[in-house]
Amino acid sequence: MHRITPLIVVCAVATAQETEVPRAEAPTAIDPEPAAAVYDPLAGMDRSGRIPKVVLPADVPHPERWRYIPEGRIKPGNVLERFFVTTFISPIIYHEQDIGTGGGIALSDIDFRGQHRREFTAVSASRSTEGQENYAMVWKRALHHRHLPGGGIIVEERSFLRAQVGYERARTRRFFGFGPETAEDDETSYTDEVSWAVAQVADALPGPGADWVWSAGARGEHHNLARGRISRRATTGDAHPDEFAAGDSNDALWLSAGLRYDTRDSQHQPYAGVRLAYVADVCVVQDNQEVGAIHEGRANIAVRVPPFSHDGGDAGEENPPTDTIALDVFVQAAQGELPFYSLPSLGGAETLRGYIGNRFTDRTAWHGSAEYRFWPVPRGVRITDAIRMERFGLALFYDVGTVADELDELVDADLHHSYGLGFRMAFERTAVFRIDIGFSDEDIGVTAKFGMPF
Image 1: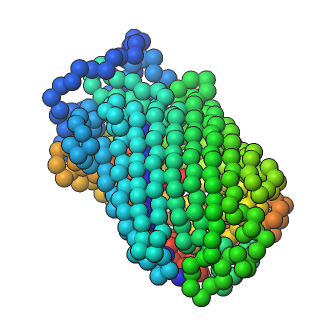
Image 2: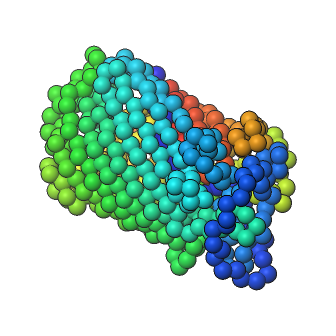
Image 3: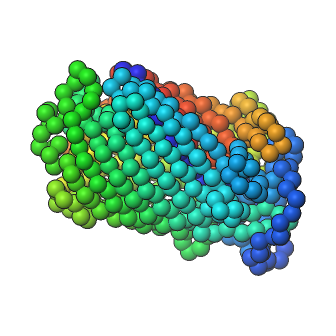
């Protein structure tokens, strides 16, 4: 069963910043926005794409965790004038027998409203010949953002406000039942019409760039379920009538809170550091169920390794090509009553990438991933002075995980594995587009998406 996951746009406000950054001798107050000047696409950059390090004000805390963006990467003008510098258009193309051929477009603007990269927004829309639809908009604003006296800006990645709204009429949701031993032939399908709105805030404690980060959020969603469209397969409503009825026509309000200890040098493409995190996602109101929650504990680490096909750049470079090994593991557990589509599951773009999405579902899950990330093309391609790809990379990955009804049953549950090869195209450190090809004993999964999986 071959599948292609459609493109999903996820962007971040920030850009490249390597490890220790030199500081100025005296504290500097926050600088006002500089006056407009003639745009130079190479301001703060070498023609090769190398970005030299800059001296940051002495009062910037944890300077290695701020992303420096040179003036040449902050092009003025409207959306079209900033094309492939701070605005990006991505096609959305997919085909599947039961949902038809679909297409659409995604527009990302990482300098929304021309605020020197403090805000970004992304809008996407797609539709298939059989009526599958997806419309979404996301907005994000950095809480800590500064102009530098010599030009360019710095942004702290950890602290932000975020909002998202969307509507999706998905005709291809799959459900295989509960537990790690479900067979490929247990596949059922249902149509899910869902609308959602999300608001989220995160901030570092006790100040910008600090090791501790808290987060909070709220999400409202409405689900309408209908018969599945997968030919020669049972519908979920026929095979699992109780679960289907409980999840149909369901309004829910989720509140989340999280705390993590995070020493990574980047939130989007870390080269070093660890993260230990706990998040509680509580469904405080829902039509068809009692109150429920999902608890997640997570740990990951990134470690620099010797460069494979390049010299690793130099000490005076802002974001030198850096090969890494990254490891990630999480455990999830459901509490109370939740609809089947909200329970922990594995498979898809982020977990067990060689399996179809939601391949394994139950009340608890654990998953581990390992990636070797390296950059065979460390300097990328310069299309024009203003339009460039910073570098191209590859990733070898391995995923393992399982699900179970109770936490103590995870130890003996059947394990599932996938492995594969990823392609990485970096516009800059915080804007990486990936294509992952995953293999398992059931499937081949192809995912196209902005952002690292962890």
